[in-house]
Length: 190
Figure (cartoon, rainbow, N blue to C red):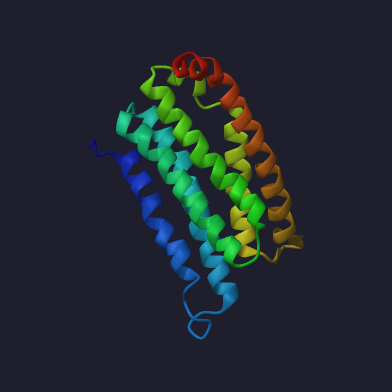
């Protein structure tokens, strides 16, 4: 396993998942809900920024690796799924929306693994639809974790609509990847 700054940032993102989740297990007598929500939102924002920054550094410093290419999307999916489960528990996201997003992540991960096994991974390479979906999620989730007005903007409302946009993009991108993979799947299934 190569060790470099981009991979360390990816591991940091994974390590922040228990921090974000753990904040919601702190008793209210120890920490005010507003403080907890603020810390969780900021922790998620920092983790999301490391996602962008580790990829940028890996390309800029020519430190890309097969392990990094594997670990980075795993970290993203773990982070998003954990946050969605917290938001579901807090009744800040609908179960159907969480199921759509988490189900898509599992489906596309399995599809990419299958396509790699049959030598057709290029057909399910990351597409801009997936990037837009990720951007919508990475903005919606901290808004929903914070879930109160900030400078006159109701972030819970913003988060609600952005997570809806993310859910639509989730389905759209899943259908796109499945369509791209279908010829290879059909060929190998015979």
